[in-house]
Image (cartoon, rainbow, N blue to C red):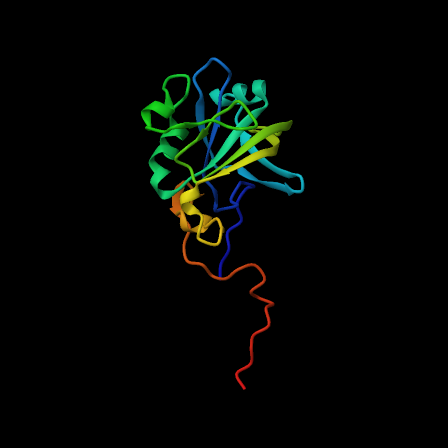
Length: 191
């Protein structure tokens, strides 16, 4: 088996494709598509997003100290791509993509009602890292779509056809291979 050695690069794929909404009071809210988003800590609940300083949403997030991470489904893939290639300086992304601003409970920035899950975030730190600056944020609130709750009260997020981004392409999540701990779970013997 042959291997090639490349220069350092970001090849940690797949990653979640998310729409991050933000806004200043009295101004039109905006949406930026981010593929560099992730979990940082579970207690307290913290996440990060990385944004280029020249992006329109960068100053909004830095000035307000808040944003909403909106998970993306197959149904939202077209809008997700659009919000990643069009600038909020020039277009109203909510209007053009027929998205509904969802009022947040803990911050002023709206979420996206069509998303199955919205994370309201408050920035705790901005870390300049080079081409992107990382916003470390505390999750202040979570909104979930009731349509994805089953009869026992479980949120069935994995049934929403979540979208990932890998090497310039969008994909939906695929086949379930197991659940956490399946590799060490004791199997019942067939005696």
